Length: 147
Ligand code: DQA
Image (cartoon, rainbow, N blue to C red):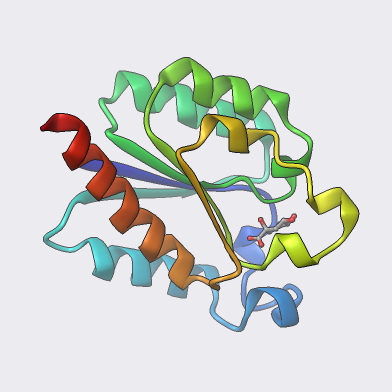
C-alpha cells in the first residue's frame, strides 16, 4: 500500500516557526517520525513545497503513480486554494486533511477549509502525532474499501 504525505508552505520551518502553535520538532524530525511509524505497515513518500501549483502536480502525479491514500497538510493553502480542492477531487484518492495546530480555536480566516469537502476526515490540534493518526485512519479506510 502506497501512502503520500504532502506538506504545504512554511512547514519546512517547523521547529523555528511559532513553536507555541507548531511545537519544537523540526521538519526532519517529522519525516523521521512518519517513516518509523510506516515501517512494515505501508510504503510512504513525504513531500513538502511552498508552491500551490507544485502541490497540485504532486496530487495529480499520485494518480498516475498508483498512490492508495493521501495525507495532506495544505498549511495556509487550506484557507485559500480551490485549485488544491479540485486536484483532490480529480484524482479520487482517499485523502485526510491534517493540521498540527487546533485551527478551530484560531483566527477567523483559518475557519474556512476548501479542501475539507473532498476529504474523508480532518485531524487538527493533535500536534505532529496527527500525521500518524491520519496514516492509520487512511490505511484502515483503504483496507475496508478493498473488502
Ligand atoms: C496549519 C494551520 C494553517 O492555518 C497554517 O497556515 C499552517 C499550518 C497547521 O498545521 O496547523 O501553515 O495547517
